[in-house]
Image 1 (cartoon, rainbow, N blue to C red):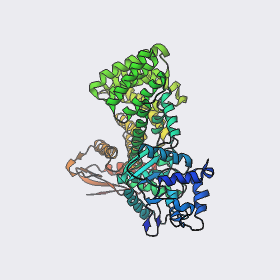
Image 2 (cartoon, rainbow, N blue to C red; image 1 turned 60 degrees about the vertical axis):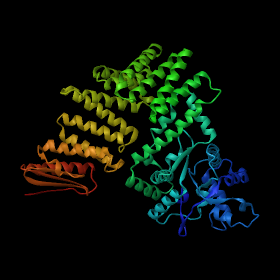
Image 3 (tube, rainbow, N blue to C red; image 1 turned 135 degrees about the vertical axis):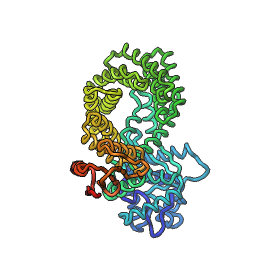
Image 4 (cartoon, rainbow, N blue to C red; image 1 turned 45 degrees about the vertical axis):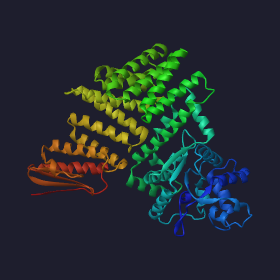
Length: 571
């Protein structure tokens, strides 16, 4: 939830709030105050109604109702131990929030009454702030674990406010940490909009939206709340991992909704074919490749019967992508389907059409996997020309990806020539610039682009530049992932090997510990990096100390480290 700290659990006395309002009482509240609720957000309902009703008592709404004398209007409202935690944003329209919960209860009747943990009803809204976030956080975790189930309300479906609110992010993080049951829901009106998008010939809108989810940019009303939550996430899981968890869970939910749409009656032939195509893409993205293949083959069959060549070509492209994900044994079959798709689309749309370029890009990818690098490179070059002509249409990331793929192919040969290396460097720099433009400087894709750039710089003999790119990459990975994540470990291993090769010293592998590098031959040069990484270099070359001092001076100037770095020698 967004807004003040009371948007989640607060302590009242020494005990956490564990009450929930019954589902029937929630509906009764809506019916009793319907005229006042029309057009209002949940935050406005809290301010204009809940706080007004409880202003004299200064109690939570739950306590206010339970203390109302028998026969009073609010004494009829039922509260009990919460068994469903509802995560939502205060910017949601309140009536849509209730409608979403209604839909969930109808689809999941269960064996008893739902008691809903909804902050504005069970938390004292007159308490202004949280005095001790760490203690409060621990109590919230124990409470959510006791509730045992969480429901995340997504509004609107194609750009959920929930994914941009720090409190909602915190609640998802805690729910994942506690390993409780997670459910997602959208109200019927939003489900109708979602189905309409599936029926449209406009691609899978949700997958494009999901790709942009970045919880590190989530907002809170108070900066201190956001800082506390961000610190907790970075300390325990890192944002890149949390982003992937959110996207995975939400994709599964929408895939289920999409499969349900297939069973709808009244869809025209074209609408049904579009739904099949989009459902197959959802299934592919969540790893259900066999189901995805069956769905897309049904789409292709319908397209052939309808004589819709473009729809068939789209299906063939999707089938090629699905087969490619099934592994090397399917690469040739994937190539055949993608080649058929390119030929059909080129005949109807023309060779320079953007949709043809997209399919050709996928064909180039499978050709690269089949080690047909010459043909793949020609395909990528043609795609790049077309995408750059359409950059204004939102093809920036596609351009970045293609540049990276071209750079990889140019570096593939055992002995790449000078021209190929320079072309590869230009491609990697171009990809890096595009990724920074899209995601900012601290995104995982920016770090990967820097690692690729470091590799080609090293092959060009530009060791200082390559080393600096590796450090920048390491800094980004550490910002996004835990210390034991393969991206972090791999990057520091690359740096260790880079120093080994650059200084021509022997590395005694069995002496290495996590976070430590050890080099042995003669005099000792110790380089301490921050408070974690230690490089102990032993060499007979006295100038090594000067080289390391110069290197660390440049790195500090660039801002790679937040603390002083000391270089010392001893014999």
